[in-house]
Image (cartoon, rainbow, N blue to C red):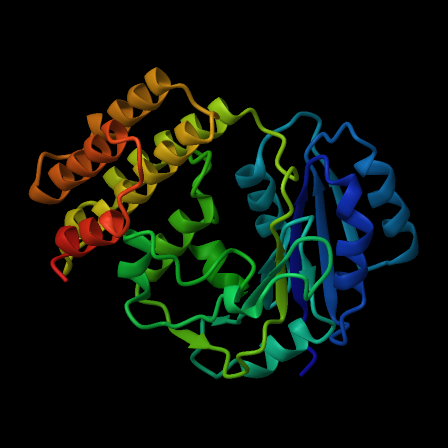
Length: 320
C-alpha cells in the first residue's frame, strides 16, 4: 500500500525538541508522506529549524502564521490543506517509532475510519519511563470513557481517514484546553468505525519532561476550567446515554486538578475556589454534580488527602 499520509504538526516555541521530533517523522519506513508544519509565530528560533528541514525534505510544507493563533486553528489549517488518504495529528515535542505509520496503515480494514495504536511516555529518551505507564487503547465504551475523563487514547494515537476529519470540520476553535477530547467525543458520537491496532507495542511516545509547558499556571487552569464547563454543556444532551451523569467524571477530574494545583502552590486558596465556582456555575443541579461539590468541599477543607475518595466519587456519580 502506498496511499499518501498527511502528518500535521503545529509548532510554537519548540526549538529544543524539533530536530529530534522531525528526525522521527522524516525517517519513517513508510515514505509516502506530506508533512505539514504550521509555525504559530514562534519567537525562540523554531522557524529557522523548520526552514532547515524544509530545505532538505521535499515532502515538507511549511505554513507561517503571522500571529499566534493557537493549536486548534493551526491544526485546522493543516487539516484543510491535507491531501493524503490518511492523517496523523502530532505534536512538535513528541516522537514516533520508525515503523509507526507503516504499522498503522497496514492495520486499516475496508470499513475502518480510524486506527488507534498504543503510546509510550518518556522524559528525555525513549525507555526512561516505566512501560507500566504505556497507554494501551481499548474501544470498549470509548465515548463514555471520554465523557468521564477516563481517557482511552490521546491525540497522536489515532491515524484517521482524512475525510472523517474534514467531514467533522476538525477542531472546535473555541476550546482552549481539552481540544482533542472534544474532537474525539464529537466524532465518536457520530458512530464511526474504530479499529484498535492489534500490535500493542507503542509506536508513538509522549514527552512528559517537566518544564516543556511555559504557560502561566493561572492562565493554564483558567483555560482548563472554561473548557471543561464548555465540554459539559456541549455534550450533556447526547442521545441514548445519560450524558450528564457520565460528564460528572470530567468535573471531578477538573476539581481534582484545581485542588492539586492549590496544594502545590500554583493556585491560591481564593483563586482555587473562584475557579471551582466558575466550573460548576453553568452545570445542572443533579445528584452527580452535587457529588462533585461534596468532593471538592471535603478535600479542600481537610488538609490531608483522603485516599480513595476520588475513586469513590466516580463510582457513586456513574452508578457503578
